[in-house]
Length: 55
Image 1 (cartoon, rainbow, N blue to C red):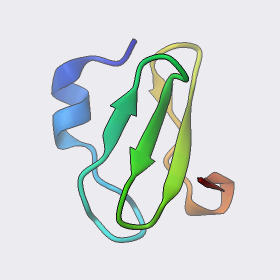
Image 2 (tube, one colour):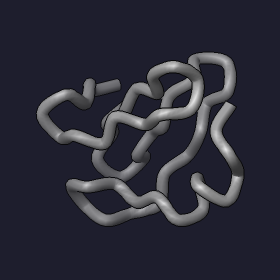
Image 3 (cartoon, helix red, strand yellow):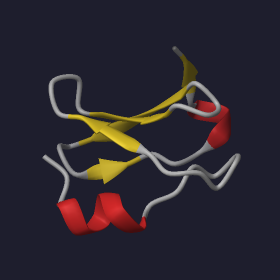
Image 4 (cartoon, rainbow, N blue to C red):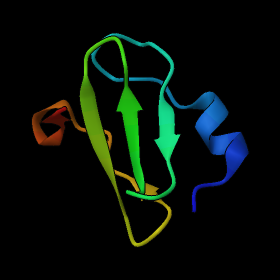
């Protein structure tokens, strides 16, 4: 699970908008871009636009 303080300061690298954390899937979601950023090893967000997935 990601630290809540980290979630507060992270922003979507594409649109700079707020992200939402899905604890069940362990991913960060950008509702504006409709992109999903995976979280590896439980607490390392992969914030690369090229590796994001559409949802």
